Length: 253
Image 1 (tube, rainbow, N blue to C red):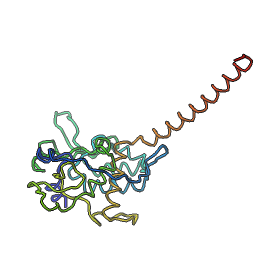
Image 2: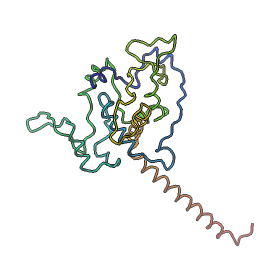
Image 3: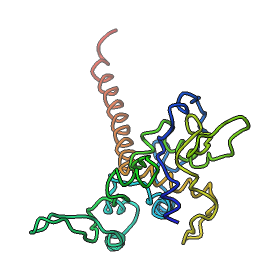
Image 4: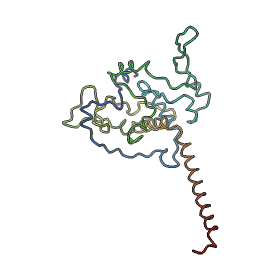
């Protein structure tokens, strides 16, 4: 499975100059997300399922260099679960006393390992394309998580008269409609332990929610702080108004 993914995957941002010149504005439908709005929060079960999708599909080519194993504590993982998860990976460390680099089991403080040793190896495995890091993908693309979700669901047969260049795939959402990454999400491509629906639409939503958490792990704290600031501002405005009435009540206007 990984060999197929490695051969097929390429960057979200990859397109030929001809494709870019043919780009047209694409309407991205709005989706309902639990994290939208002033009081939005992450659906932890959904994000955990999305992490499973990332591990089983996306991690073959794409890194999450800004996400550390310890960050998963905010998703409800215990310290023991995080250590167990990290121990499934090996990372390069060093140098040792002899000046050599060495491999060791990952620790909670380590970022998730890159799937390739370096960018040159990543390009060699993907036909010259460099798979982008997904840590900030939902923040880097206009439309955010809506764009990522519809991109994953946007693989269609090219319409009559549209020529897809060799090595590219037709996608109705991607600018220019030609993308290097092959279709990755399909029905039952993963199986969830919690029995959640695993049709393509649900899988794409789950992994998109996970990627948005990766891009904004402090979103819930930011929403909470913003709400407290608004409440404080309203109380302060009320007190200021009452103080103004008290100061000016005996002064003729």
